[in-house]
Length: 194
Image (cartoon, rainbow, N blue to C red):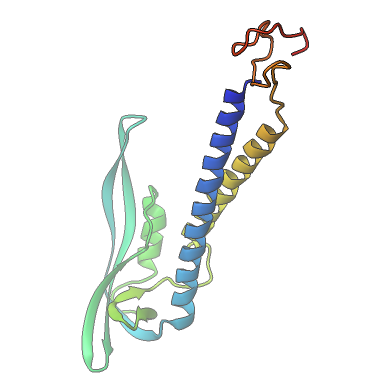
């Protein structure tokens, strides 16, 4: 294989490895953020004031179609240090399944009481669905999986490019293409095996 092919394999391998490492770093940061919410954000009892499913349109460029995406939107009222808050919160992700989001909204009917976690630095920043669940850690898991795939492919490309042999002209020691009859640098004849 030509040195250009090896260079491209190394470039692709390097890019994939870098993207994989960045994705793993972001996954670690996002996972740590979710873990911090669970460990250090205090809870408060809140009353649901509104519970509904909202929707938005998402355009798929590849198929030239619009998809309706749904999200559970719930408003909570709670009191901290004598101050009352009415804070909207969403499920944190959208789905094309209305039924899934309706089921989530129905779990929080108006008038019911629930424990929610709030950010001590900003009491309007709340999480009603914080827990050791796949849904709460979905983004870190997704990014981590993508990081492993990209990083693995990058390492594979780098490994394969390392095992490719660079052919050199016996006269000038410059790289030559496989199956060339003459060196493009010094015009020396090359043997049939080079």
